[in-house]
Image (cartoon, rainbow, N blue to C red; front, side, top):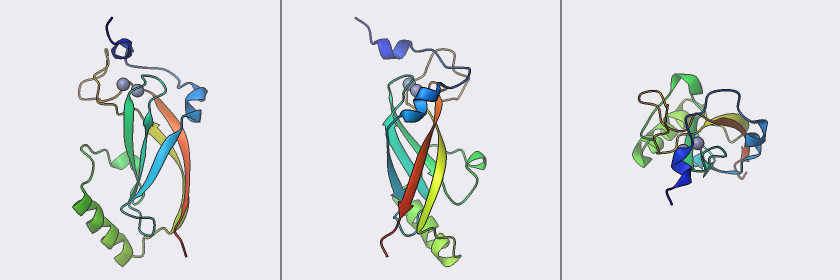
Length: 130
Ligand SMILES: [Zn+2]
Ligand SMILES: [Zn+2]
């Protein structure tokens, strides 16, 4: 039997509202006190592949599309910049639109596009210890 997961075609259309119930693990990077980005990990509700999604906090998400992810040293440097310029966010909340960025190539996906085309919303709140 072949792997059924690979047969999910690239999704075009309106996201299923049920996808917004997807459980995602959230990690504030590089740390809770001077976060530069939120890393969300979980399983795509459409294609069932593992998804890691980095949501930048210091710039508008739509102007920063990057792959591969920032390394630890880059993150630490950005965290230091955030601290110096007073951009630190000790607490916050974000309604993050997660795009499936699974490592699989789905049938019908546009050239150079990762993931299955699904997107959903995850609400993240955080507060650094006082
Ligand atoms: Zn996938
Ligand atoms: Zn997917």
